[in-house]
Length: 315
Image (cartoon, rainbow, N blue to C red; front, side, top):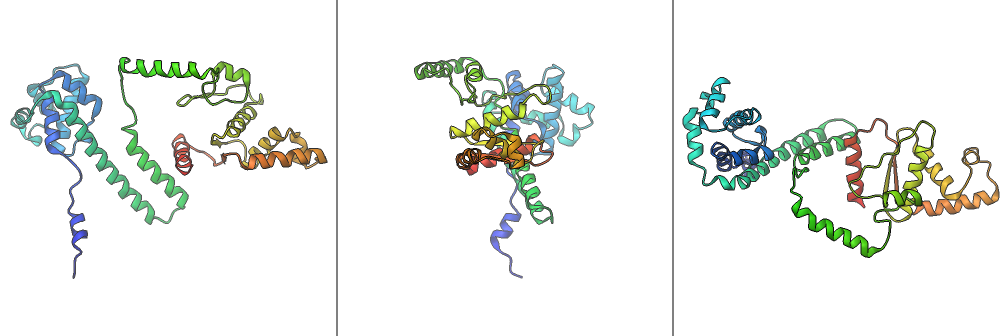
């Protein structure tokens, strides 16, 4: 039977890893307190490819959490208490790790190599899981959502930047303030269309979460819909996720607001000629607006994020 060379080669491929970098990270952690702080901020045991290295890092993390010194003796003691010392090669292996460290000052670079290879392995696992989903006889929309969640789960570990010193942020912040001053407007973000609200918020800004809170039946949904409409009229894409209204109801509210048509008359269809004209004009304007509505039931935050990212890519 003929065997395709490329296929056979792919089956023998070893998952991405760099054992030299793993050894250097562990060795540096056992000779430098600063190195321990660095690797704890970057890595967790699962980032290491070699099982013995995972055990050693777990012991280092245990000592770090207990605010105890980290060196070959304390690590070997922690592994011995776990009855894992012999499984990873004994204290001689720990001593060998220390001897292999070129310099502890480069531990940040070594940790980055370990982390990136870990991300690649997770990506391979996710792609394998996605391949399995594709063969299942399930709803394709559900399969796509699960596939996106699998990929985003891999990316989540790299999303946070962690603690950042304030010094490098000062110049960029001052530049932004100067730019806003030159612009000469009180609205520095995306205007909501409500003047008093815009004066208070200076518009809507990236990375900000704005919560509309009030007692039941006080107009929260109407206000949110009006803001969405006003923002879209300025050319900014808007996604509306609604758990209490259908897509048709959302569109009806948008038409009523934009066309200044009584909602009760619209629901009953009892509209006069002038109101039909205003409604037709509103429909034409709304037709061109970049507004997207999703009334799927029981949406999770992860699903909403995935849908928004998909929409952004399509736009």
